[in-house]
Image 1 (cartoon, one colour):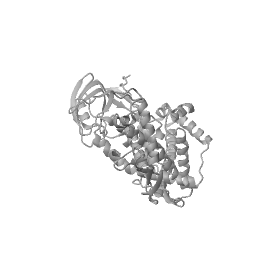
Image 2 (cartoon, rainbow, N blue to C red; image 1 turned 135 degrees about the vertical axis):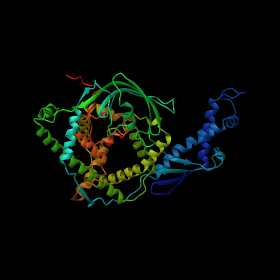
Image 3 (cartoon, rainbow, N blue to C red; image 1 turned 90 degrees about the vertical axis):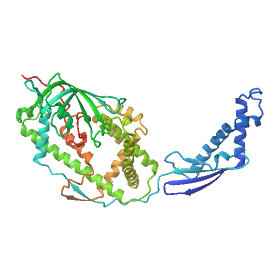
Image 4 (cartoon, one colour; image 1 turned 90 degrees about the horizontal axis):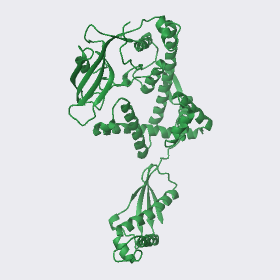
Length: 490
């Protein structure tokens, strides 16, 4: 076997392989004899048909098996010879495959395309200049959080002497059918709470559910805008049937010590509540600033180093991002399998850029970890699994069982910890100055929303995409699962 390596690019290699006629002939004869023993040819007893007849009758089958038996080991040998580590399945190319002879009368040549990790020089990761910007705390923010806590403690008082109006909360069983597609599964939601006039509620619901009363049934049509936040509903017209189960008005608790003491955290007084929330906000602001700082350092590292990124890894990461997007949308009640394919393709295309940056950052951070001799011990992995178990309120054994069913298993935990340490190396060697908060500079917006939610430590209710205009991520804090039935007046 003759081999030659061609470097197409830093990530693309091409191996030319030529297999000698003698090797081809040997495999051809072996495969032909195997067929002669196994197949039944009309006019001959099984196993007694002449080889020439077998080779003529089963020409394509024999050719396919000969190539498979030749290529699989030869490609593996060539890859090993040149010390290549393919990132994906190698691509084989044969000139004029239809005219290729496998009887050993001529050598067989093929080209093998292999994608590999690029060889990158040691990155400049020390002395990166960044500014730490900590969000200042305000009384308005504290008041907003306290007000949201009051909303969670609110009681729905039934309205009995009038029909519904703006500001009321209507509880309905809702069913909607697609006017332009009868085959699409209907939208159904029971005990759905709709606050009339709320800025986050689709205007048509407020218009049609104003002036209703308990036990009434109402039919109406909603034409959703093309840019509506739910892809499943954007540009669609839905015919709704709503059964009114109750109409109620929200009654907030008094802002006093009694209310503060009634909360789960057992605050001693309203001032105690304010004090502890203020401390929580300080912790959140610091964590938020740290997240922004780390994100900025990674961004600077990426911007400073230009190299070719393997397309196989970009595609893999883009698919991961798309899967995450699909899971997020499923949590909002949207099945991407039922969404217009052009929208899904557009989302995937947009994710390619983010995926390229993610992979570039991962390669650079791995190089940093290598240069800094970063190692992860079994003890550190065990501690991380224990932390995950506590966070998800389960046991370490359950976490391990879950990991064992995933590709990579516990190695993924070690890799994550290794990356975390590499990022900390950037922080430890960075030139950090303190600066004023800039609201527009928000590279870690997702982290901010998550950290704000920690202040409240409350479980968010699922968004209803048909009714609410804005996706849940746009809300500043989480809210408790709403009460499904109006409380009765004492």
